[in-house]
Image (cartoon, rainbow, N blue to C red; front, side, top):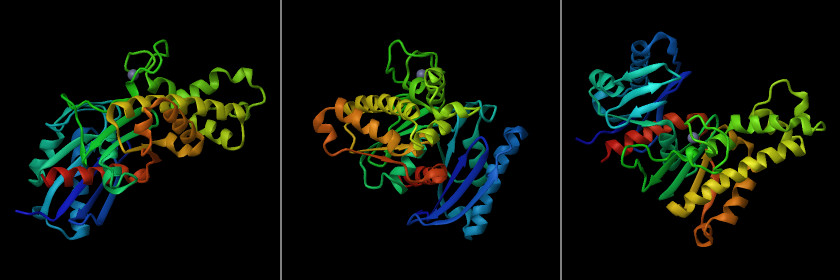
Length: 317
Ligand SMILES: [Zn+2]
């Protein structure tokens, strides 16, 4: 039977955001509550279910009219079985979240990780509308990615595709959280930008960064926006490494669009210009001619909108 509504749930370390759309993609209701991860997985998964009940009530929709629920969850997931294998943020191990939600609502429920879901959300509702071959990269605490082909997430053989952050970009580079050396995440993520800025700060007594007691990517960006040459150079270098990484991905996937999200993408042209310049220099010319590289549009709503897109694409198959 054809169902008219789809629900998306974004489970994050600090908040749970849930939304419901009708068949035309109109957002009918949203609910946001704190995750309170310290209460443990049973309480948090119950709270997720409660937000689903709340959007159903707010939108005046019966559970039996919902085609699918999409869930975006952090950490390592067993995507087809909807199990959160381990999530450092939530302190969860082997939580069968898909089963918990399906047992409560009797609605087919689909899972995916943050970056894949964000990519799908941008493709369906944000900066990537109309793109058939889209790559999404998120640059914040880490660097993640999503490969979206014909409106669907490309998962690879074991549901791990899209780990753009762990592409080696410098054989002799710094140690990455994954255990490898020289991953782009270890060189150009938010924390890496802050570390790079601090490393040679002593050689730049004129830099505004000397006035800050703590330096994160945000302060580096702030200083660069005030015209600080050293801060600009640090961001430009990170942008060039991201651009070189994207050039490799462009040569591999031949996308028509690249959408960049995450906190670092808010730096605007400071980082987008070196990214585009480096792509122009390194990717195959014919692949770059019609390629656009743009910032994400959905901001803080990307998780819930992506989870809705996941429900729509899975529920319509
Ligand atoms: Zn790595």
